[in-house]
Length: 141
Image (cartoon, rainbow, N blue to C red; front, side, top):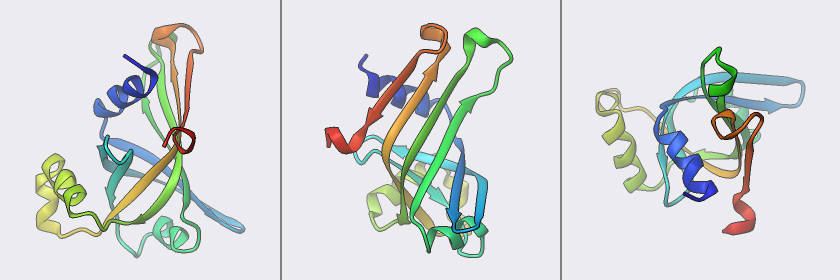
């Protein structure tokens, strides 16, 4: 398994991320359910225009986030950090992808968004203490 496959394997075992946004003099963090598309290296999320993080994104599309395995056992620690660009979802195939993962959400008619990942950093102590896998997707695209 190559490094990107290891990261995508970690992602497929989770469904909630923390997302950080910012504008000058203000920051925000939230939790979001996500679907991930390997082909586009994108997360698909649902969120309302009324949230603080979306208000930030409308001014600054650059985001950071993380997904983690919560554990007290140091040998089992795994966590993914990522950076990317957040934008309204336009791809209907990705919309279908999200609703396959979260079919109950369709009834709520949520606004969907796409996070195009630019950088991944996976810390995986199951591979050795402090083992980090770094991938800059802008360099391999």
